[in-house]
Image 1 (cartoon, one colour):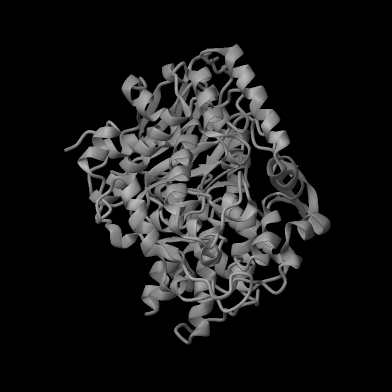
Image 2: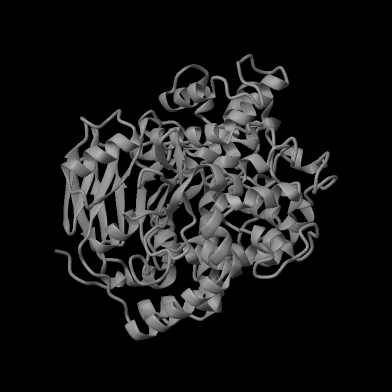
Length: 596
C-alpha cells in the first residue's frame, strides 16, 4: 500500500519502452517551486529534454502524464490529469487534459508524473499498482476499441483501477487520435493518442490506495469550504452546467450569431433548438456524470436506442452537428459515441468532415459528403480511425486535407489545430486567444467566452478590440497556473486568482499571492513560446484563416470581422515580446527563465 505523501515528495516515474527499464526520479525542488506540477512540470521536462526538430512520432519524443499538487485532495474538481508532448498535428508543444478518475488514481499511487521514453518493439501497457510498476504485454488487446480494451484491462488487473488507453485511431497513428479514460472522457486534442500509438503503448492502468498529504489541512479546509460556497453561488456552476451540461451553450452562441455552421460559412444554425442542451435533456437524458471531486457535474449520460452513453458535450455536439449542417440529435450522439470507441478527437473529426464537405461543395473533391446529410458519415469516421481510403487522408486533419486538394483557406484551424465551437468574428478577445494559443486553435487557453458572452465575472463588449490584449494575457496566465494544480477550467466562473493561490499555498506550503500565481503562469506561457520558436514558428503563425477577416453574412454577429492586427501589436507589447513575437531578454530575466 502506498503511504501518504506530499506532492513535493512524489517522484517522477520514468519508463523506457525501448529497453523496458523503469526508474524513479525525485521531483526537483527548484522545478517544483517555479512550475508546480501538471502542465508546468510537463512543459519544463519537454523543454529541457527534447532536441529541436525531432519528429513527434519518433521514439525520441517524450510522452508525459502528469497530475498536480491539488490532485486527489479536497480541492473541488482536482481529479484531472494532463498529457504533455510534442504534437504530431501542430508541431508545437502540446498539453491535452481529461477529467474522470484516472488522475486521482495516479496521484494516490504516489506519483507526480509518468514520463515515457523510446518505443516498445511490441504492444504493451503499463500497470501501476501503488508503488509496484510493471510493463505488460498488450498484444491481446491491440486492435480493440477503447471500451473493449478498458474492460479487458480491468479484468486482467483490478476492477477498482482506472484506465487511460488508445483505440484504433491511436494504433494507426491518426493525427486526431485521443487518449480515453472512463470510456467517454478524452485527452483529445493534438494527436496525443498518436504519440502513444507510435510508442506501441496501448494503455496505462493505475490503482492507488495511498492518501494524499497536504501542508496545512485546516487552512486548506477553510479555503475549500469557501471555494464550494462560491461554486454554489455562481449561476453558471450551480445551475446552467449541472442542469443542462455544456450543451447549454448552443442556444446562447446561436442567438449571438457565433455558432459555426457549414464549416464556419455561417454563424447561425437554422435548427439550433433541435440540438440544444434543453432538447438533449428532454429527449435523451439518463442522468449526469461527475468527475472525481467535482461538485458541478456537467457531464451528460444519454439513453440512445436503449443504451446509456457518455455525452455529447457542447464541442462534440457542434462539431458533428451544426459544423456539418446536421440537425439529427440522436445521430450526433451516436457519432460522438463512435468517436469515443475509436479514440478520436471529436472537435477535429467533425471539423475535418466539415472541411471535406466544403471541398465537395466547392468542386475540389469528389466524395459522397454533403452538408446536412448523415449518409455514409459514420463509415467515414470508421475509415478515419482505420486509415482507409479518403478516411486516411482526412485522418491527418483539415489543414493537410485542404492543402492536398488545393484549397487551404477552407481549413478552419490555427497552427494546424481545428478551431472549436465559437466563431471568432463574434468575440474579439476570444479571436486573439485563438491566434496566440501556444497549442494552436484552442478555446481553453483564454476562455473569453466567459466575460464576452456569458458576463462572467463581468460582461465586456465583445465587439471592441481595445483592452482585449490585456484580458487575453490575464486568462492565458491564469489558465496555465490552473493547469498546474490540475483543476477544471469551469472553476474560473466562480473563483478569483486569490482563491486558487490560497488553496495552493495551504496545500503545498509554497506561499503564493494571486500576483505570484499569475507570474508562474506567465513563466509557463513564455517557456512554451520559446519551445515553439525553436521549432520554427514565428509571429506569422499567430493568425487565423482568411475567412474571419471577411464579414459574417447574417445573424447576431452580422457584418463583423476579426480585428487581429491591432490587438496583436498590443498583446506583444504587454507580453514583453518584440515585434516578431519573441520574448525579450528582460522579460525572460524577470520570469527567471535562463537566457541562452
